[in-house]
Amino acid sequence: MIKVIILICILIMVKFLEKWERENSQRFWSVIMLLAITFSSFDEIQFQTTQTPTRIDKNIAPVLALAINYGGERSKPEFDSFVLQTGLGKRKKFNIVFHHRLEQHFPDWKGRMDYQEKQEKFYKLAMKRREEINRLRLIDNKYYYTKEELNAINYFYGTGFYQKQQNSELEPNIFDTRQTFLFKMHDRVARNNYLKFSNGKASWS
Image (cartoon, rainbow, N blue to C red; front, side):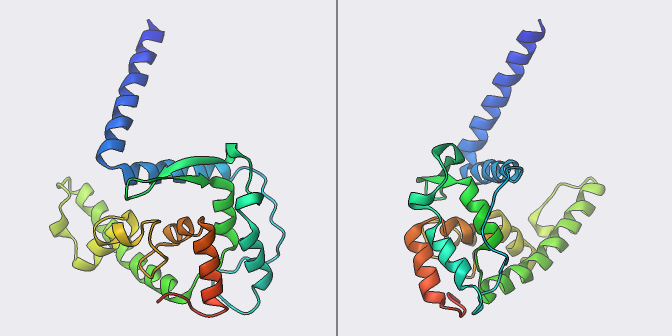
């Protein structure tokens, strides 16, 4: 009897996940990807560098060279990768370990980081407002939020205007989050173009 109940629960869960992936595939795969990255953080990953740069400066040449070399021939084996569906419906192979290394060591640029920092302030306000709405047991509605707060929610959820801007098929831009920027850096050509274009200075504005 217990086995039958467990089987029914599994079937219900599978149906739920299938419906979620069909109705909102971008958010579904984003959650799956983040969970996979979280579990991968328990792996022992060695990276030969003593810096963790976030902004582009003249002292990151060794890190840039190392970032160029990672991926391609030097990628981890196939079991470190899975297929990720992009916002345009295309499927791309995603290397979890490589992404974790990018998170730790790949350089960013001031314009994008400043934009995300501004959005974080409005996003925190939106989340406090949402907590208050839930506390009062009201139905969550966009009219409770300011224009800036709704924009910040779209920014971090990758919806609305940002759905296209953050898609991995586009070149990096100021509307990327740190994560969507790094997703784009999985592509060797895009990664090399970024490093060549930045050359120790701010890249895309």
